[in-house]
Image (tube, rainbow, N blue to C red; front, side, top):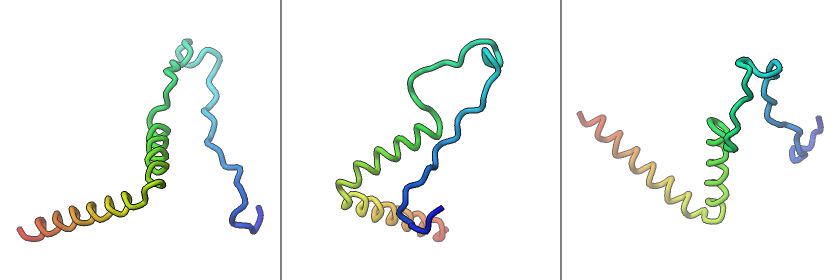
Length: 80
């Protein structure tokens, strides 16, 4: 490990656990060509951040709108 905070890392996702020959059911796992679950969410988030990096004003506007909606919800909740 180096003291340089900007040095690249060797972190990588964990490989899938090894399965016995033929898998647990004897059939090969289905390969749909698309990721699912956390991988799909991470890919969507990365795609959104890549697009947002071109227009940071959109992020500021979204944060403002989200804060305004949250404030209105809190006001309605505490009114009752």
